Length: 576
Image (spheres, helix red, strand yellow):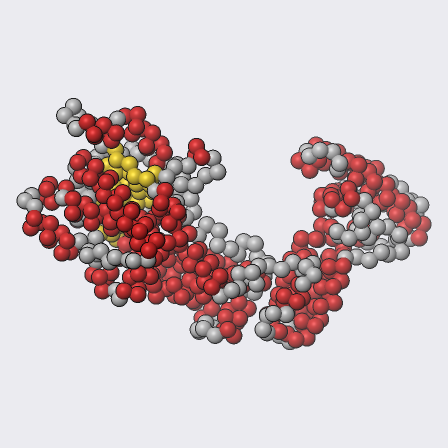
């Protein structure tokens, strides 16, 4: 949980001169207008992009109603600024923001533009307790049925395919209600504008600490009423582990998140500097960084540290302290994207990271015009080698070819295990032979790629090289010794009959979801086909001491049938 505060500076001083007491000051329209403006900008840029919601705690019930109207005006002003590009610097804010030059401040403000559609739909609700002397126009805010409806809708996400399961309500404004016992995991921020103490303070800030999706890495407490000093007193109510846990859960944003962002950035860079790459600026250095990610263990380390860095960046954005780190987000986002394609690593992605940093990376890739070029190209694509040739270095081209071939082998392995096992062994031998000789490796991989994509050729058995021959090769592999002439002809006949039987069985609706049907087919393969006696007197697959070889081949044949389902049912088609 991150706690921050806003210094309203000269605005607050002017209002204090104008009004007589604390209640009048905190309920003053000018001050509420300023705080609503600041709250909405923080919410729209920090919380709303990831689909989270927030509560506002007003000084009084009347103040809560004033906040509701002030938020509507603040929303209209912000939308007007976004649509016209005429940004207005508010006369308040902390010293750091006030010191920013216009180009940095407005770059920070324009971060709201991508979320303008959600901002237009954004709705606010006020929920306060009622009394007999309340004005008539307060009834919508005190009516129990309306309050329940608003609470339920607040808990719903902004986006859902079912209109009944989404809601545009993003901010709930309260005085005392919903500060305890209200469980809404979608809530990430609490804006406090009145003094809270003891258990009420601790329970209120706990509203934002409910776990939710992966994008919710923390909760935000923005304190307009100097409650942070009350937190120490509140924590005295607890002792031992409870106290330590409460302290750990409640962090000052500036004291915690900014140093963490800096540290995580350095740890990310150390993935490369620790392997001899001290800086990553030029194209050659970027290519070297991508090459260093070739080992899976290094990619795993990079992914963990990059995610940590992006998590902190997501928490800090769009605060101006994040600006110096944006170039690192873009650089490592590009490296991650290229490496994910080159090494065909499906788990090496940005799933689950926040919308703000993801947009930062995506916009950079689009601006560089490399999005389409970075999409993985299947080795079977007719323009595979043409697209690979766009890489500037032989090392990059050879690496792309090697890992595209590895992926093809993984995907197709169960279609023809013996053929692709041979391809794997030959690939490893070539990579080892031409290690670090990238031009030669590139040339050596070309014929292997051609052979892998064309698939196995017809052999002297006369069996279909796609639908039938792979089953023969598996049987031959598990027999171990060379097959005698008489046995070879008989095994060919058995394979033909077995493939015909398998093809008939797998036509059953939902066969691959029916465990009993699969077990029955496996038993038939073993007992009827693999256990048949050959002219030599041996079984098709020798039974052995415990029948384990026949069981292994039976399992493998069933997995091959699953992989080759479409090819088997098509019949007669040679190429998959």
